[in-house]
Amino acid sequence: MGRLIVVSNRIAPVEEGTAPQGGLAVAVLAALKEAGGVWLGWSGKLLDAPGGAPKLKRAGSLTYAMLDLAQADFDLYYNGHANSTLWPIFHYRIQLAHYSRAAEDGYRRVNAQFADALLPLLRPGDRIWVHDYQLIPLGRLLRDRGVTAPIGFFLHTPFPTPEVLRTLPTHEVLLQDLAAYDVVGLHTTRDRDALLAAWHRGWRETPDGRIEIGGRRIVVESFPISIETEEIAADAPAAWNMRSAHRLRDSLVGRDLIIGVDRLDYSKGLPRRFEAFRTLLERWPDRRGRVSFMQIAPPTRGEVADYQEIRHQLESLAGSINGEFADIDWVPLRYLNKSVPRKTLLGFYRSARVGLVTPMRDGMNLVAKEYVAAQDPEDPGVLVLSEFAGAAEELDAALIVNPFDVERVAEALERALTMPVEERRDRHASMMRVLRANDIGHWRRRFLAALEGAA
Ligand SMILES: O=P(O)(O)OC[C@H]1O[C@H](O[C@H]2O[C@H](CO)[C@@H](O)[C@H](O)[C@H]2O)[C@H](O)[C@@H](O)[C@@H]1O
Ligand SMILES: O=c1ccn([C@@H]2O[C@H](COP(=O)(O)OP(=O)(O)O)[C@@H](O)[C@H]2O)c(=O)[nH]1
Image (cartoon, rainbow, N blue to C red; front, top):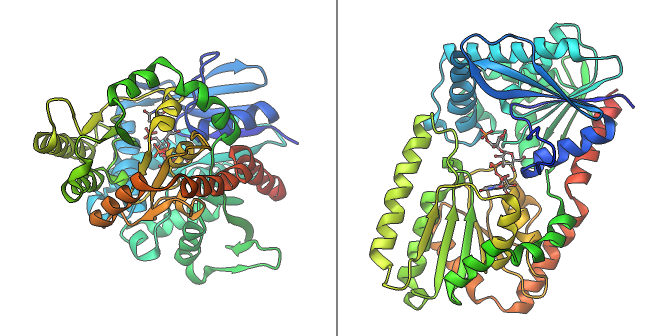
């Protein structure tokens, strides 16, 4: 088996002993340690005139290749086309998409820089695994440069239905870019079906389940990303005993906790989620003084105007809910604009009676899975989950809600807060079966087996 070459916009912390954050980093690091190889990504540095070649750092059989970018290119590539055009369209927020040719040119220019940086690092027998919407053109750019190695692509966001995708003026180019890969992985069958529908009559399914398109046979499959289920379940009791978790529970003085953990992104449905909590307090006045909602929302992509806008909106909503309901000894909504270490989060999840995960659209949503895995199986909390999170396809034993229906979300919260322990245990056990069968190792092995098959 050859080396594995991973390319993603961000790479996991390079410092020795730093724990990787999030499913992607955990899975990619495990795969790279197993096979040896290279992880190419943006260095996190923006320079006036970057050198071109990535900085290399070796860690055993793994080489990190870190590419500096020019500030002007980064604005067009990351803040521009990736996060102001593709991200909103892929999350069905077409009114928020701001397409510009200049931004798309910048996006393609940076993808070409990634391709040029990767070429000298490749060896015969390598397999290449490209991640996410920031790098869709990369596979075709590598092919143009003569690379014949198998190249797989995994999309971490949803893939929109054809009518929504058509709002991207250059969607045909994007579809051709995707067809240049040997394996295209998506989170859910819904995303896979959307991609096949967008390719409309240009493909046919072969008897072995592959897709023949543009004279090539490729794999187009759903590979739902997951978490380190056993590790999280094993670590959660100790995390529950950490000082931070004790401080949280002490501050609750016996009140129930509802928890939300999301990047401060408009796709996560936070304004309606806050409104649902307000509705809970309005319709069930007994809940006042007896339940607290803690929303952890680290800021993200702060240079993009729509992210600044959602931040202002939430500050105003949090203020208005607390202003209306807070008492001298109770603040209903705790709204934190900071990131919390993942280990600490496990203790918080386990302390919360309800995990509230209500994105308007989300590729997967690992927080939903982490919340479940961190629960005490004897006295588990309840997951309230949006039907528009990829995780809902697997976690159907959660209380599934439509996040556009604020009243219903409030009703689900009330139901979760009053759910008998037997029902909570049953639902939890059912979700844990799914999370054990499809953990992060399973996800990685399935994708790599498909890529190996292409080789
Ligand atoms: O790199 P950023 O711009 O700071 O954003 C962080 C990541 O956000 C997105 O995450 C997605 O991947 C998760 C794991 O597959 C998935 O559960 C979630 O639903 C997605 O939103 C983005 O796709 C990544 O590229 C970003 O690095
Ligand atoms: O303050 C925070 C907020 C989030 N996370 C982690 O970031 C990841 C978020 O992944 P998810 O799929 O839920 O959403 P994304 O941010 O990738 O869209 C999860 O592993 C969280 O545990 C974290 O470590 N600290």
